[in-house]
Length: 215
Image 1 (cartoon, one colour):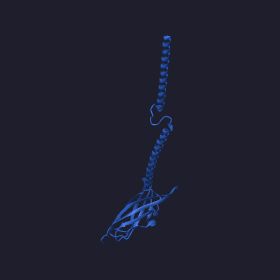
Image 2 (spheres, one colour):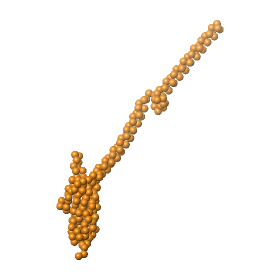
Image 3 (spheres, one colour):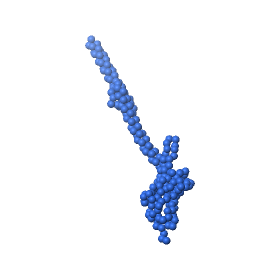
Image 4 (cartoon, one colour):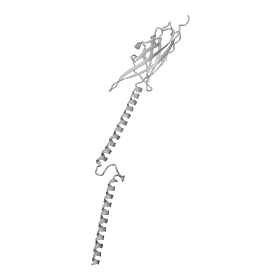
């Protein structure tokens, strides 16, 4: 009888140990599965979002994408603004004329405060280093500043067009003994399919009118 009781106790103890071992294994398996799900993203544990709420992670990702798109849009607008300024500068350079003036020399007998012979100018008009041909007398203008209004440009009657942007003009006046200074202006408009484009340029003009030689 005692022997049977010992056997029964041994069997119960063995079953208890087996049951406890299975419970421990199940707990460890569940724990490993939880850790595996937490490290599913490239092996990096993500403690920011609880299990079962992946939409929070997606919302965060979309917010980051929207932020980066906004930054790119701002950079693009800045680049376009700078390109616009560069385009304006290029247009200004294209529409700027270089004007050079040479005053034809004359002897005191030819031009003085008694002899009102005209002052002859040679004018070179270029744009981006290329002579601008085809200008008319009306594309030129002259303003005398010193002495004020004492010299004038007479237009068609005083204009000859040469080649490669070279022109000959005359200034007339009731000369007095003085140093003269004025501004020659060149302006002409060309039409394109989009709009009219006006190009301009100026140059300083100086010359001296001496006293008439003594008789």
